[in-house]
Every structure is written in C-alpha cells, then in structure tokens.
Length: 488
Image (tube, rainbow, N blue to C red):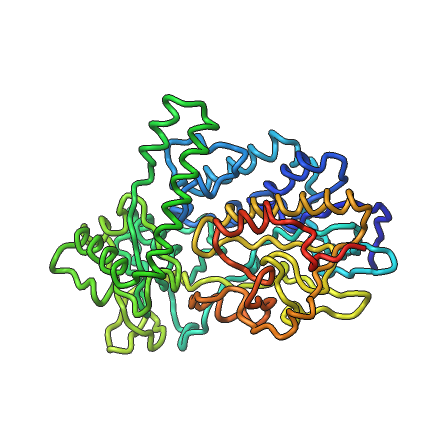
C-alpha cells in the first residue's frame, strides 16, 4: 500500500552520485527559487565511488575533466583512487548544502506523467519494501546506466565444481583475504587491469584471463602542468586551464582514432612494446581486432600493469574458457589455470532510467519507441531529462552540460509561463533514418542493451553527438525556441 506525499516539488533528481550532486549544486545556483529533493536508493551518496570497494579502485579519466567545472580538483594526483573521488563528491555536497536534500533508501520503481495535473507521480520503494509517492513538475535522471544490484556474469560450465572463492568486483567482500593466494581475474577491461596489479602486491600470483585484448595506454597519475600551474595561479584559474588542455587532448586523440586509426594503433602498440620489451607477445595479448575507440581505451597509471607483468607477478593469458574445474579453469587449448580465487571482472549490466517503469497518462512508455532530443530528452515525453555522459571522454563533461541545459530549460519555461515542455517531431523529421543511441561503439555491454534505448536520428536536434565541442553549442548556446521543444 503506497502512501502519497501530497507535496508537489518543482524538481526531483534521481541519484546522489557524481552527476546528481553536481546537478543539485547547479540547480540551486541557477534556479534558486525551485524546491527539489534528491532520491537515492542506497544509504549513502557517491554512486559508483561509494559502491565499488575492490582493490585499487580508481578513475580511468583525469580528475580535471571528471571533476565538476565549478569545483577545482586540488589533489596532486590527477588519476585518483576511489576514496579520494568519494571524498571530493561528499565535500561538494556539504559545501553547497545539497546533502540535506537527499532522501536515502528510496528507489524509483515507477513514474507516471499526468497531462491533467502536468506533473510526474513517482513511486518510491523504501528499505522496508513499503512504497511512497512523490509528485514533481520536472524530473532529472542522474542514476547512471548500469544495474547496481548485479554485474554481468556469464554462466560458465562447471562453475559449481570450483572449490575456491568466486567474486564479482561489484560486490567485493571487504574481508576477502587474497594474501599468498592464486588469483585468476576474468576480463580485459578497466576493472581487470586495475585489479591485477593491485592484487599482485599480496597474492602469490595473478592471471588476467581474457578472450581478446584491449588497447592499453599508460600515463602518469600526476599532471605536471596542472601541479605547476597551481603553484603560480589561483586554484580556479589553474583548474580551468588544465581542464581546457585535457579536453582538447581527449578530443584530439578521439579524432585521430576516427581519421587515422592505423597510425594511432601503431603508436599505442609501440608504447606497449617499449614497456614490455621485444620478447613479449604484444600481438597476442595487447593487439585488439578493432580500431582504437571502437571500444574504450584502458588507462593504466604509471604503467603499473606493465610493471607487474615485467616483474612476473601478473600474467596475461589470452584464450577461451572451456569450463571451470575443482581447482581453477580449463581453457580451450587444454591448459588449466590453478586458482584459489576467481574474480569475474566480466563487465556490467546496463539499464535505462535506473530500471524504473515509466508511463504517460497510465499507458506504459517504451523508450525504444522514442527519438533522443540532443541525447537527453525524448520525443513525446514531457518534463524529463536524462544524464548520460561521454563514452569517449570523461562522464562529467556531459553531465555538467546536461545540468546546465536543465536549468536553462526551467528558466525558459518560467519566462514563457509554461508548465510543460515536450520534444515533438516536426513533419520533416518523420522520415529520419534511425541509428542507435550510442553509435560507432562496439563494446559488448552497450551492444547487449542498445535496442532498449531511444533512437537517434540523422539530423539535429535528434542527435547524440558524443562530442563535447558540439555539445557545448547544442546544449549551452543554441536557442530553445527551435520548433521542437513545444511549451504548454
């Protein structure tokens, strides 16, 4: 039985992670008269950076672009560990008082829009399984794109036969003792490459078992330019200049991957060969079958993975799994990897809108039937904005732009005395070619779920550009009177 909260809020933000906290700060600054709350399913803020507790957890983007544009990152390390990032998010929330607006232990399970009342009614499941409702005019989704409850773990034949411990990084046991243990990490992404050198410090031996390689680049965890600038300039200036530098570099690398993929591929592999030496089989273990940025590049700070491989503490094995055994994993080539602990760093499960069920006037809404307006609103769906960051750059760059757009949209509606805004297809848009919400990106976790996401079109504003330079214009400067955003 649900209890109704008759209090009608102007805004509800779903998710108290990096995106949600940043959006709340900008809402308070740019729309100070709006009443809002943040809904958070867990009992603490921080999102990803509070959830993941596995050894070595860190960012795979520099904090001058992963951080907020309004709050300088002051630590010497630009590639930061998870606890440092969580501290930064908590500090931001406390400094601006947005931590007082968070309602913990409330999970959005359903949202229904009413044209009659011009508002959303949210069903919020609490820790005791009871349901409360909350109404709001505008809804901002900052819940990320993956399921917190369960990571992606394929079913391996013979899994029940394994006598050791099986662990998924998303649910890391804090009392796990891997000292002097044989560890096999299944995976080739950022999580596996973070875990391997971190666990190798205590484990007797670590194997990173992958079906196929990933592009890996190394860079120092400290940005010398940033730290030099901070010694001579105010923090805000130094941060802004470093952010500008790093954004430009990220964009340059991505453009190179599209224009001259073979040249970039050679440069990356040459760097790996330099780290691992001429006798290491880079072709087998670090040369993917795809071009750079067809999937994410993996960043290893200070070459820690390569150092661990050189020292013999970590071994990379590239082969398919036949089955689990009592003592480890049997590979297709007949080799058996002995293990006391197997870590399934096999990826994440995506979901749209935090897994909640949406409806319009009581009729179920399937977002796959909609078109994405600028990658953050959806055709026919009123008063709803979703934060979805960059695949090819730091997530927060787009989260910041989305929050700024959201605030600008609210003020635009107030100027026109409007209660409703709805992206609406124009006549000339009805014959658009449909493309995936995230295009030109072949990562498995994306491919498994793209059919559930809205479509993007072949023309503005029905594009999800994944391009920070273009998005700054689209979201921050382009007129909201574009013939598509219909006010009512």
